[in-house]
Image 1 (cartoon, one colour):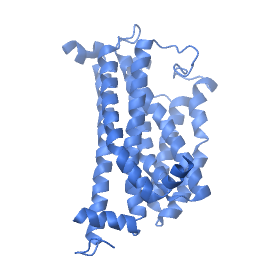
Image 2 (cartoon, helix red, strand yellow):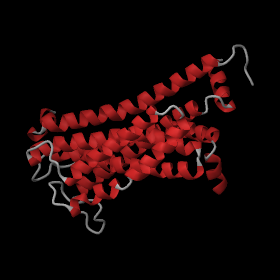
Image 3 (cartoon, chains in turn brown, yellow):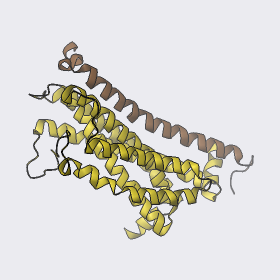
Image 4 (cartoon, one colour):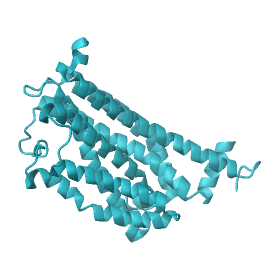
Length: 54
Length: 247
């Protein structure tokens, strides 16, 4: 395990690279999902109450 | 088949298809990326010259490929926007831009993290690195343009023009390593007849590339849905969606 984390001495370069990539790969879909939910919530609050169909 | 394509041009239908695809694309992305990460970080052997530092290419190269691919998607959608004025194409274009910018950013940063131990420097102003940096500026310019203009549809058309003009940068990036003397190595994988990379390293690289591609498809479609909801906020199907959400 320790050897794995040490990355042959290149840990100061390998781990920041992978860390940053994971951060972006996880962050972008999460942000997109939140944005969609936020938009739908805003649109729902603009609809007149009590109606279920147009 | 043709009919199916035609229906995809309708925002309502596109939204529904994107929504249905989402769980499949999302889980495929997760599985492929986990396999790729394990393969690249644990199973693949260290390089005889670069040791373990080369493992950065398993994220660097897919990010760099995606930075170009996403731009091609954006410019293609831009062309459709200008010619047919399809709202779906506008949504795809705007959905792609920030993701392309992120991939470009990742390609630049991971590349420089590999460059420091291998070249002895984080950055050189050579052809490949500089043209990739210009790609980042093109993405950022497109994003800025979208938020600078009041009318969404005018902004989309202006953005489409910018995206198409910027296409000139794509072959420059690709051929930069052949046209100019540069620190960056030449193409290794796309020499299809004889890729100068061992299969034990090529396999995880391709798995990671597929994972990045799936990630873009997943996230891009969610973002395209957001764009369609915002652009079509007053249309019947969006209001129906919003109402159903409240009950």
